[in-house]
Length: 221
Image (tube, rainbow, N blue to C red):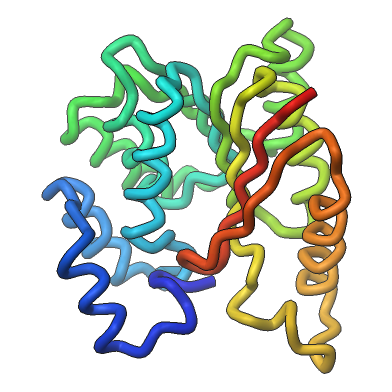
């Protein structure tokens, strides 16, 4: 996990931000507060949030899904990019972290666009499918416990429409996926997941080396 794009030296990363990042003040404030959180490394990079917002606007997305909220930076990035009648369905289990998120959503004036479900994401995703919401989402972002990535992906693939986009975070895992000496469970789960997506003909993929690695999967079935 990382709060900036991996593989860039500090000078180049600072330059990248200086000529490309257009971060609204409310997002910057949230990012600065999250930097003091004990798990601050779980924050996505600001340039990644900006990319996701651009993709949402480019698609004309109105209904989006997020699996893993933390303090809400990615949720807020997407919500700000949605039209007034847009909606984010957000899944998380941590009431304390999402309390920070709610505060900034309210401050940004987008709380009405976000429905937060505090329950295991697998349960919320299964409920959405049981509620006849398959094929109704334009965009989904997965950034939660790595051991369940495959489950979240399969459910999200059912929930997004044909031509919808799924973005999956941490697929480069701070470079550990490329180190054969690293054999812990989470790293191996991400390796297996990356291999699966490489072969999955239900989607068109591009793995982008932004943040901690972001795979974009466009549903074509």
